[in-house]
Length: 253
Image (cartoon, rainbow, N blue to C red; front, side, top):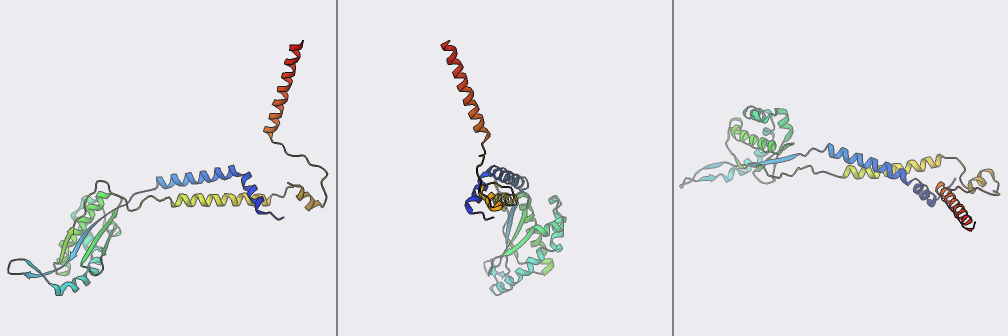
């Protein structure tokens, strides 16, 4: 049985209330789930520079060892790995017990990055608490600066800037409507598909064309389907006319 596009649209329109009900329920439930399970994550970072001076000049000022710049830049990759090892993180846990974090937790939330062709690297911390992220970033920087001379036998770490607590921090994971949109589109497509599937599986005779196609007979007459509201309206009009006729008869009498 062939169904043209107009019939598809007619089937969907006839079941519009089902589509609205299911799509609204799915979208609302997804929105509630996304809102209730959203947890903001905050980020804090400190910047350090890897640099070693060659001594003091005649005025007592530190002189930069330009020949060691290339060596310092190559050491950054080594320092990035050292920071995220128990050699540093165990010291952070011991010196800052008020942070209430373990070594494994520190390793999982601390990341180290560096700008290409520079001696600057950043210690980045992400945590559910903005204040805790700031304190951890500063603690890791302080411990790394104090421990690197014992590990590498070189003192070439300087903290450029420390993490600061902000009044209104912005989470790095902003709320997204992606799942809500996907839920709306997916439920809409699924509902329409199910409606069309059920209609295709329905083998009852609905039109004159169905009768002629299956029985190969022509129809002599058909009884149209009348909606209940039309029947009720006709009954009300009939009763109203009878009431008017009775009132008119009483007036003549």
